[in-house]
Length: 428
Image (tube, rainbow, N blue to C red; front, side, top):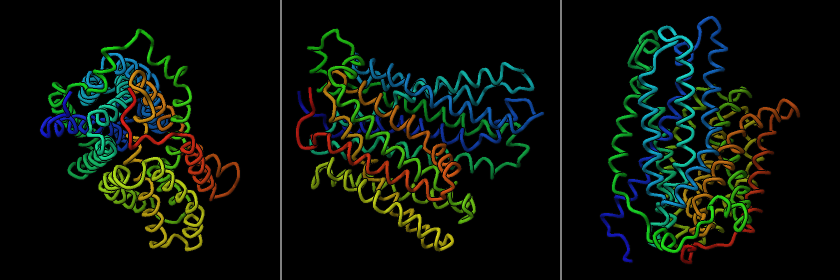
């Protein structure tokens, strides 16, 4: 079977990219507007309880991700990643539209928060299959010498979606006064996101499966892909979970927890820390494909990622100590962000291809989905809570740095047992 033509290849890259934009647009938007949404769907007598409940529903979406990973992994390995992507984007676009149209507690009573829970659970289910499905699709349809670069578009979509979500929320809260935002304007960015979802559905309508899946599908047995991931390919699955969990812990410390730590230590106000964090996200977007090209062309992917994680582990303690010793000088904070975010851009860019190359076609999506959602979604997602708890228990304000160092070295150890397949054909 011939390679995809340049035109169809561009279409497939856009198809893989657009779903991750929607996925993270919605999650970033919901997290940013949680304080506004809380009194809309929960009784106003206890605003703190309402905010906790709203964030609890936010977390419930993450808890659905492993279930979505199992379902979409099985479906994608059985019927193809392209079909899994088509279903997942519908299950993301419709709840975003519904959220923008939900009745408030004042008009519908207890039905309002119940519907909010249902919407978030459905979104969490679809998110569990979206990233791994699109990353697998991108890497499988890529030219052999551009698997890293092509797979990096999955994370480029995630970062772009997060920035769009934060930007849409900030635009809404700045264009309208607080009462208008609380009354109805908070709905606008969700409704706008649903329009983006319609575009994604249209783009993905004709996405075809890769030659790798087609070759596998013609000779596939009736064995369960999910069962294969935990039996025949148990070693690959466990290694993928270990690496994803360690790398996910480092990611969440840098991208999510660092602004909170700077604020809690009195080194920088939260607004300034978030502004730097957002600026670094802009920096990471072009770095991801650049490092992916390095993994495609010069250094084997596994070696490149291992070097980045090793350097991150070695730099973690000095960077934290410098920020503390300098009293939070702007130079120390900027350098720390630049080092951490630049190093994390390596696995963000080359990681999708590495995961896809680990598994054979018969259970590739199942193994990847479980590893990604358990490792990054659950273990990584718990990192801010773990980091805060370590400070409280140990009394060490550098405890998160120690945790990141251990996680980075753990990622290197896990990679040491992963065969490098960046220069060979994908496993059938």
